[in-house]
Length: 349
Image 1: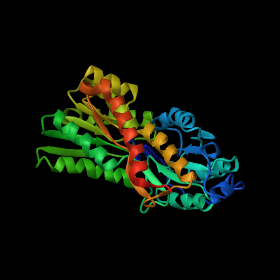
Image 2: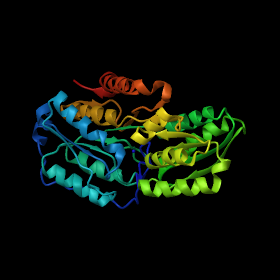
Image 3: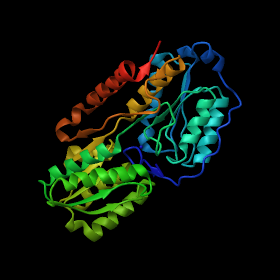
Image 4: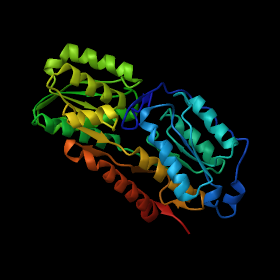
């Protein structure tokens, strides 16, 4: 969804990875219940904690509230106050644990350092899910439920290539260059371009432009001024550049095909009006709802069949033709994820 800001979630957040600090906890909540067979749902208090504020995470709020009601959980809270600082996020997690929250769905600020935070939380008896982004290297959370960003970027590039008839010049707009997930997005785009056998040229991958919408707008304006007439398509793998390019190309009236990511209103309006050829939707609702469900099951005594397993939360190509039905498709994918946890991923006695 990072600093990156969602350079990790299918949207690219821009953030500086800072060193982590230990998440110490002054209150162990209902650990005694876990030791004697697990907590009941009403004893489970889930904290959904992104690394900071970003449009991608806003659906987590309603999804968490829905999970609380449907699963009869003790509570679900959403806290985005970390400010894209790993040390601050650790402090937020410490504070939430002290308030009695005992299950954590976390989008870590630093993919290189977040594992130590996950390990600290688990040592205190708390189940942990890495949501919307996986750590660099092995995942020390119980599971990671996130977009497969390389697959999503490949789908986006293929959609852009199809929109220009399989030949021409392509530009890729994305998030923080040093983020491992940005590199995977670049690899996905390059794979799609390579499959054209030279008919499509990737003339530039523009990184580090997802910090905020204003930064993305400036980058898109500069790109269109310098190279607009050379470009046939733009593929976006980060949220703010997608919004900026959808609006920038529409205003410029240049014949550039835009493939966006996620479902910002500007992107959806572009699909309806024809200035956006396609968008690649992710599944933040499924991450929050199914993540909360899995954390409840782990709190109740279940274990993961494979510790630290990574699960693709899904990505979907949406065009004007299927615009009206995409939410139904995403809802069906979310239900399939929940069934996958029940059938394959969780071990419950």
